[in-house]
Image 1 (cartoon, helix red, strand yellow):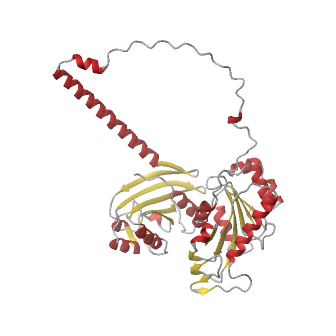
Image 2 (image 1 turned 135 degrees about the vertical axis):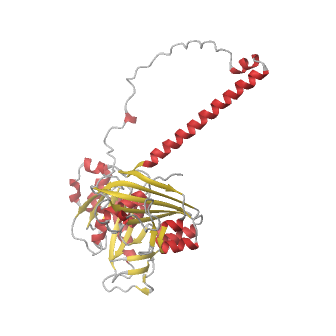
Image 3 (image 1 turned 30 degrees about the vertical axis):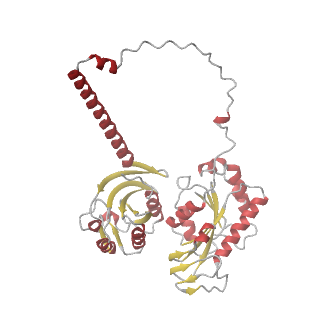
Length: 422
């Protein structure tokens, strides 16, 4: 994603918003697109911290500075917000910032419609800070295309993935029309720069449209008669005595079993090779160690270990990969835990997302150790799919790590999509 900064951030949390989208890096490796920071669409009530113009949608990002850090935020669209059980009181603005975000999204959609631009869906993100641990939104508001979140790299990635869902990629000229509505200064972006961000160049000739009138027609030639086929196996078997016939059939069966076994082994080895070396959004991951099976309690540490003592898992696999991001070498641990229950998986996910609660050690850790030394202060990401959890840790191979490092957090987000052995 290319970041265009038109002015200072209108809110303090705007710096975190810009850092989160900058961590995606240039190009279409993550989402592509252009982030215009500090824009004010025609008719919008205020300047926006960012407008994300993506190949498959537009997302307006409105920053909101809360009075302080918050543990629990209830953020409906139609009624006032509640902060840690108390109504949100703000002297300088409305008590429900989501309404301003929806108004900004609607204003931008109207401006695009009046100019005949591509009818990309316009959604809204309300980024709250300085920090919010948990946000609760009504399901109906989520369906309306509004997300309220603290703008970490992981949360922004997840929200944009859900909101930018246009049926086809927006072309270069259509993207320019959208950017012109935000600011005419964005016209300086070249066609090459926009195509690098995932906007297809619709002017380029399409192979499907190439003329085929000059391709000479090949005259049909008479087909040669097929050669006479020798007597088949059934005929040859019919000519053999009974005992010889059984021996031949047994030999054929052995050959078939061997061929099927060889094909299965070749398929398994091919799958292992694909798992051992993978690419996600242009980042290469090379597996260095793997462990399938084992006891989740022995692999866990901290409060997570105590949780597994009360709720045993049904399956565990752990892998460690080498990767590179931001010009530095990194190590990534991927643990897949099968709990057999979506409720149990959700409870464990909430515990893993609680700072200081412990976690699952990497495959190379010593027995009883929280993790290998290189995973100290690693950035983490957790993903739930039904009753299964995927737990990722990402750390620098050399030098200290920081769990809030945007590059490591983006790497952990990518590692959530790594393939794991079946």
